[in-house]
Image 1 (cartoon, helix red, strand yellow):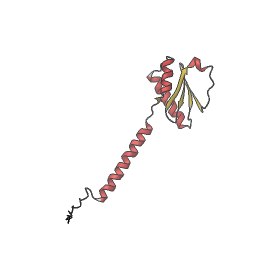
Image 2: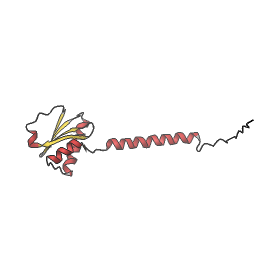
Image 3: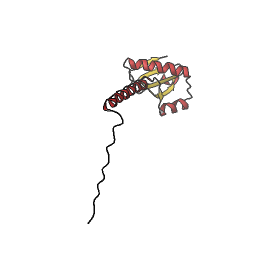
Amino acid sequence: MHRIQIQHVPLQPLLQPQKSLKTNTIQTKQSFLEHLQEATNSQELKISKHANERLIERNISISDEEWQVVTDKVFEARSKGVNQPLVLMEQAALIVSAKNATVITAMERTEAKNQLFTNIDGTIVL
């Protein structure tokens, strides 16, 4: 007949007392909240693939300073409830999703004169 052997494995002690675990959990939540706030406060516009193609195709150049002004105004508009503004600049017209912080499309300002813009709920004139 087969003999069955049973080995007793000692229980491993907890690395930290239960009280410390709660403290670490609270610290983790706080650091997560701080990280989340930093991420949501990051005010940077992304450019969609489509918008980037249009900027290149139409040879539209926007300086870093101008992008910063556009970014600031888009986030200001978003704080006032605007979700999809039309941004009119000297050299370009941009449709931006303020909710997603993304430039959706771009065109030359002269090209924008003959366009009908729909699904926008605000305009930023720079």
